[in-house]
Structures are given as structure tokens and as C-alpha cells.
Image (tube, rainbow, N blue to C red; front, top):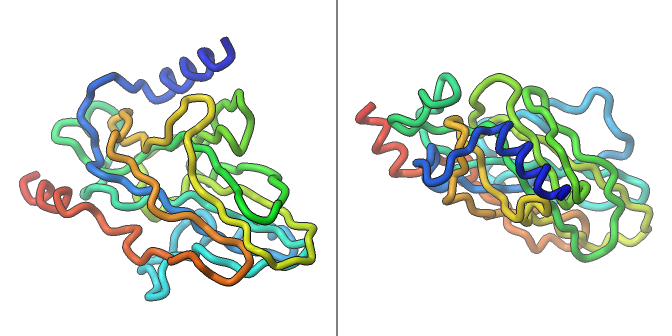
Length: 228
């Protein structure tokens, strides 16, 4: 019953009809990570608003690990179609335009154990319900506008008490309440082509490759934009 209520709440929030055309052909989910000795107040802008252009080393998917430090892990939504819709709702569907409103997802940490502290929605987004509990079921949605890749949805905080710098790896998994991870496009519909492309690593010898193409719009999206 609880899961049903969560599903109904999300459906009402996003007004997602079945079988609708997607606004983004193949959006991709990435993770970025930063370590802090003390939880910063205020949170640095780059945690929620991506710097541009992406540096040659790629997005920030790796950080060293230090005992009693905190890691911020942000969800990055890339490969959105262009142009991004200037509004939200039905007007974004025909023709389908890019951008996103939210993402239901879960987070899994493997390797050396760390402590999950919280999930925080970034400015311009609002957290949704979580029956299974965070980080297994995280959800946030836009409070007003259609967002482009520069805007991160939110970030999770983890804490380590271990003196070992051994690696912890983070990955996006299905939202435990809804059994899916999908970008909600600006037409209030799921983007069925959503894929997870990049995780994040905290500590250990870097074995993860940080993507340099996370923000590139799809080629087909570029082609379609020429005819709008």
C-alpha cells in the first residue's frame, strides 16, 4: 500500500502519461564527487551548478578519502536534447524539446563501508516522497522551470570514520519505490532512453574514468533543432 501511494504521488507530481513521446532521446546519468574536511556552509556553487566547459580531465567523478571527512555526491543529468524548452508541460512535447524536471533514482555504495547522511535537493528543485528511505529511493523535481545539464538535481552526503583510504564506489540504481531510474523531461514524461553512464569513486587508487562528454546533446537532438 505504501509503495502504491508513493507511485500515485509521483504520477500526480509529474503528470506522466503512458506511451508519450520523449523530450530527450537518450539522456545519461552521471555522478560527481567532492570531499570536504568540514561540511561547508554555504555549499559551494559547483556542487549544484556545473562549471562550463567540462575540463579536459572530465567531470569530477573521483576524490581521495580522508578519515572523518564528508563526501558530496551529486547527480549530473547529461546528453539532453537541444534546445531546452523555455516552459514546461504540453508545450514542450510538440515538437519534443530538451531539458528535464526531475529524476527518481536510488544510490548504491560498494567497497569500503561509509555512512549515508542525507540527500539534499539543489536550489530550484524540491525533494519528493521516499517510502523505502534514502538513499534507496531518492526523488526531486523542479519547482518552476525546465532545467539544462548545468543544473544538478541534488546531492547525497556520506561520512567516513575509517583511517583506511580504500575505495568506495557509488552507482545509480533503480529507485526502490518505483523500480526505475528515468529522467522526467519538461513535457512531464519519462524519457525511456535514460541510461546510467558514470559512477563516482571515493578513495583508493583511481580506477574510474571520468567522462568528458557528459554534457554533449544528442546528435539527433541537434539535427531536430535545425527544423524548429
